[in-house]
Image 1: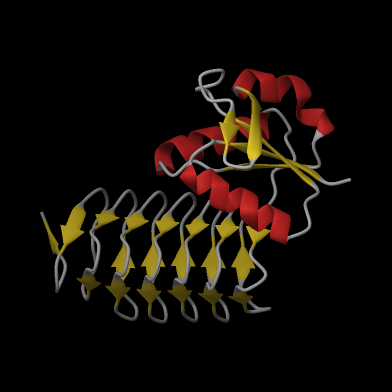
Image 2: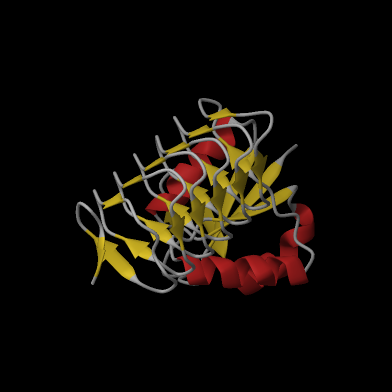
Length: 205
C-alpha cells in the first residue's frame, strides 16, 4: 500500500492530493502546523503538525510539500532531507514530459503541463496547471511557474522565483533568484535577482 504524507493543508494541497490519487497513491494524509485548528482539507484528514510527521514518517512511502510560499517550501524541503524523509515527485498523468528533460525531487507537475527536451527543473518546483516549458530551459529550486505561463526556448529562471499567471518569457531570457513577475507580464529582457517586474513589456518596479 502506497501512503503519501503531504505537508501543507491548503487549496494548493488539495490539488497535490488529487494528483497523488491520479498517480496511484492509495492513501493521502495531510500535516499542517495549523493543526488541530485545521483537521481536514477537503476529502482528506489532517493528522497533525510537522512534529507529528517526524514521529510517523517511517509509516509513509513518500512525503511531499504543498506550500505555495517559495522560501518556506525551500526551508521545509531542506528539513525533510535532514530527517531522511522519502521525498517524492508527482506528475499528473495528463502532463507531457520529454524523456530528455529532468525533474528534481519534490517537484509537482500539474495537469496539462508540457516540459520539452533538454529542460532542467530543480527540486521543490511547482509547475502549475497548463504551463509550458520549452526546450533547453532551466528552472531553479523551489520556484513557482504559475498556470498558463509560457517559457520560450533557453529561458533561465533562478531559485525561488515566482512567475505570475499567464506570463510569457522570450527565448534565452535570464531571470534571477527570488524574482516575482506579475500576472500577464511579457518578459523580453533579463531580470536581476530579487526584483518585482510587471507589465508588457515587463519592467522592474
